[in-house]
Length: 414
Ligand SMILES: *Cc1c(COP(=O)(O)O)cnc(C)c1O
Image (tube, rainbow, N blue to C red; front, side):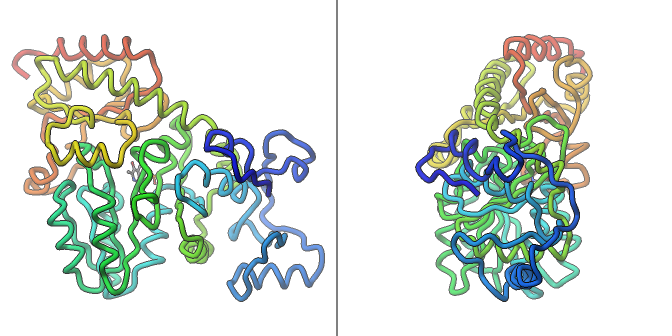
């Protein structure tokens, strides 16, 4: 694997991790779809198994041979090398066949029966289900603290019995409420058994938020969103400062069989050099659209980082986010008004998911966040009239015009 140590992010993502000589000189990686690999000698096979099972450690510069694609394959290796420079502070990465696969593998690797996971609320719906309806069956307890309540999060981290993992998602979906990563990581570090501090960095990473530089240990991504960027594939990524954490997860991934497949790795790999371009454009668009819509008389509240009014939220934003991103939500008062907006907009497609180059809109209360209790809705600020938007790379003036028209056409009685 080629490495250019001095290169900055935008260069390294194009120059690191791929040696054209290993792909017949092909300027971009080839796809290696083989399920199994031919060993050069029985000794090489023995060595490969020793390293893969952890009985031996790969030496600096050693070329350990490939074994079988569930363990690893060239396209996963290339992608895992190339994604590291995109994440500040990362040393090592692992790719999965969805964001949930990465999250599941992380939690199953670092938690044991009797452990507790303290998390910020709301997490992604799948993560909440995983903790409460599945990990609970294995004797793992979950303690959730609403995003933004720093002192409450501190006491949960200090007081939890057998704390194994602190799991943060910031900004929280769909209200964009932020969690102070540095503070939570510092509190976690006070514990005798240091829990693994994980951050789901899907919303602002890897370009605008860098939790590994703030004390987090492990980052998890739904690469289905901004990293892949075109709403045409599923993928997940885990990244860490300490390669030992990734090595532990690699063992679990071999058992679960949830490595990202060669074709998907290849597709993702081609998207990496444009992640920064897309996210910057989407964030600029997001800011312009959110700030304009906030002034529309039908919009009762706008949740977007540059429009925060809470002093503590502004402080966290300044401390840990470079740019506000392209996701926001706004309150239209009633479900009828929200549905009318979704029906009226022509540019925003009514779909869940986010981070793609096209603008998507949805109603969290009845879709991504349906099935919660009234107390939970109140606690995390999801109202009947809330609409979530993920802005794409269209001309922002067209998006504003379309959204304003869609708002104007909401019936007065809705
Ligand atoms: C979509 C999403 C996930 C789940 O990822 P999949 O790729 O759909 O498995 C996890 N966390 C966040 C924040 C997400 O937006």
